[in-house]
Image 1 (cartoon, rainbow over the protein chains, first blue to last red):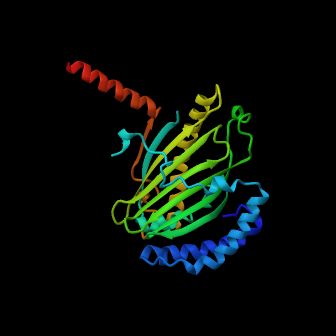
Image 2: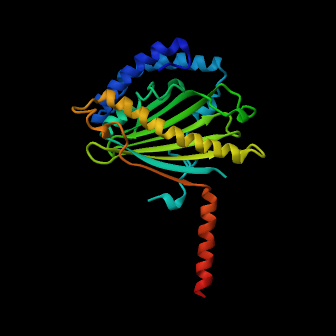
Image 3: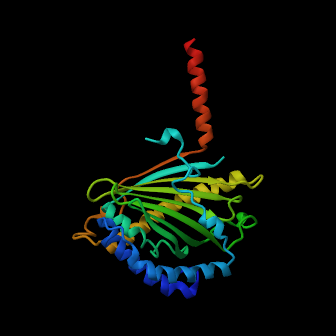
Length: 81
Length: 208
């Protein structure tokens, strides 16, 4: 899958590979230490943030958390079974 | 008032497989509309993995909708929480920008349903605030969403099947088809609430 910034796609692939291995081999098995991918994540992040800046993407809207907060939409009550 | 829609589908894969496959869902043959996918933030907190991703997708609107929605692509924020202990994955997506024209919020909960099955329960809220057109836009949104549901499930199944091929797969057609697919839609969540309120009033009137 491509990154939003063409120049970041290679970094994204490297990071995704690292993450996917960590996720199934470590995290799902109870190991929460995610430092193994933090180096590549940092480099990839910088690239993506620059690409987003160039495309005038609103960072504030992205940073807003909804899931797990009171702003999360709730299913109508008669569906909660 | 937003239109609410929900359905559920069953994947013939363990929850661990579905959770691992979730991050590799794209690309798949049904996802040609997904243009990019990026991880914005990610952290482990209290044993759960919190992720926020930014996706861009092509914007498919009917001719009459182009006057409101002429962007070539839309940006989507996807928040998710993976709880490996309880085997629950929750995803929550919303569009970034154009929310007055049409806002689509989708929440999906993937829960383990036995050693080789995972149930995805999907809720969606579709709203529009375009004066005079909101009803038509909402109806379009619900219709598009309903059609996309099958594509999403088929696309995800395709990825899961290639990640976790099974002996005898292909013989068993159930391997690719969702076992259960139930649909339910409520035209208007508020209308249902009003109906309930009316029913309550009626029943209390009848009692006296």
